Amino acid sequence: MSTQRQRLCSLVLAVSIAAAAAPSAVARPVEQLLGSDAAKDASSPPVQVVRATPESSFDWGDAEIGAGAALAAGLAGAGGALAVRRRRQTRLARMA
Image (cartoon, rainbow, N blue to C red; front, top):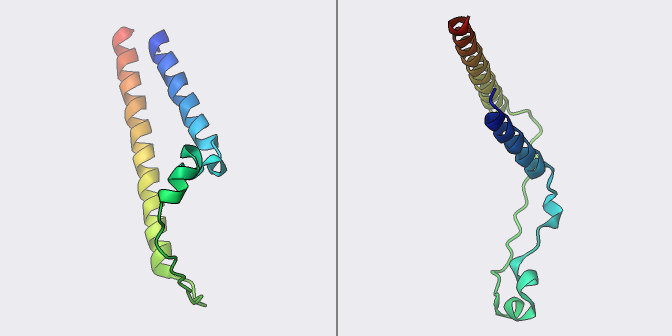
């Protein structure tokens, strides 16, 4: 792997880790950042409260969708890993 590509991969990894680790509790409404004048001008719509009744049964349809998505993601990852591996082996064979 070239030095430039290695640096790029390291940078992408660092940015990904920083984005995943950033707490969402730091986020604040824009009115707090702009000051009290913006807070006075901002009008918010009335809040509507919706109450959901809990269901007592397990939803198998949702479970099937989630399992299918996980299986598809796993197969896509495995296929990508095999493609990269085969490409590296071919490139190494040409060099030898």
